[in-house]
Length: 549
Image (cartoon, rainbow, N blue to C red; front, side):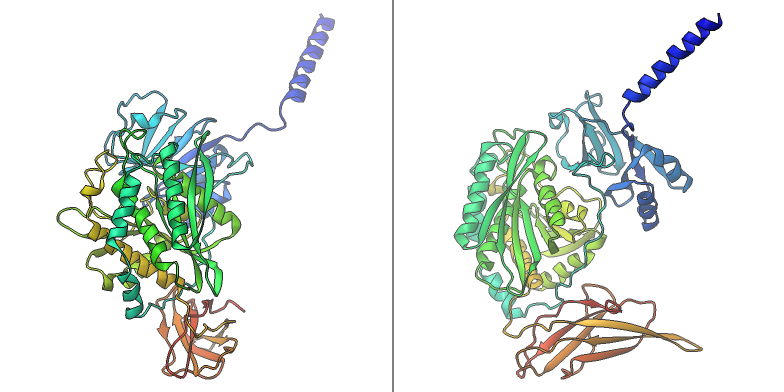
């Protein structure tokens, strides 16, 4: 009996040892998608500490991809957490924007899962590549990249660090300069380009017609004299398309970029055959082509990139590809202006919504301040991180400041074969182009004969007395090489301005002391050079008060 027991023990030991030896060193870490109802900085810090990644920030919640083991830790913090899904290999995830209470044709659609995150925004996941056929029109999609977050594979995404807020100049162009540019906008060119894009019959990404439309856009850019090239990418396993990229190089700081974009692909209920997409989004694409036409021969401090992207209707794939690559390359994109559906104002109002997230609010303010005096349509600011359904959102994901300009009306022809040129108001579209043109030009800073000051540095010092604390900021910079009458100093309590001029008259020296400031407040400074005729340069680069401490 004892011998039989010993033999059984040895046999079991052998089996256990064999399992240990052939088992992988570590099992794949399971993950989970969570909805957390408090989109606050404290939540972001704790999520990061547990190894989680914020996939999407919405106005009322965060969508978080975290190791399953992190859930108990997050729950102990007292957050309102809902487990939404456990991602599986082969599944694709999307944000689905729909105003319908039931966005699926059949609530029991096989292999398609929908979960509402907040009003109008759903999380959709599926392994079915043809899932779009089960969605009720109208809808918009944004693809979410989840692969590789915990496996160490390339392509992992998360909430990136905020982009450095580059000073883009709070200098608005003079009235005549803006007026001269605006006067060049041609309604007839807009009409011709929208019609040409409509005449491809469909521009649904993955079709030959869409690729041909990309070739048309490339040639139109090159005809204006700007450098243009294709940016190919793949999406949804086996499809391919291309973005079209045109560049007007900056003459002073070309590494700094102002980017204007629109998607040129289209969609309808019969996308392979008839998706003319005149408003969505031949109108925005024609606007980008018009910017190229007007700005091609102008000179700017910073570079202007004009980008027409594809596969937006599939889930923002083209812009996501471009924005991820830009972040990887360290591209200094200061601002993004995305135009999507700008030619159907509706019967009763002529309003353009200017949409941003919290980080981009300065840009929305800037857009309205520059453009509104020169156009008759009304510009309305909307700061809402849940509005992720167009290409600006891809740049938000990479930490860039971006806005979307879109008509404030429901187009009844949206995503239908009836979205054609004859339904549009081109005078409205022309005004949107003029507004965007003025803003892009101002942000890129037209080249002046008088160079902006360089080498601005700042140091701060806090003095403590028995009763109070005060901050003093010391500025110094390099003297301009050409002869100038002096310099004006400007200050703001937030990056990007607006700035307050501190000097009543230009000062001749190349240093300045700013005293009696609040000790716990950050301050930001820029300079302008002034010549003997009173003409001013563009702003210098911005510096924070303690940047050189």
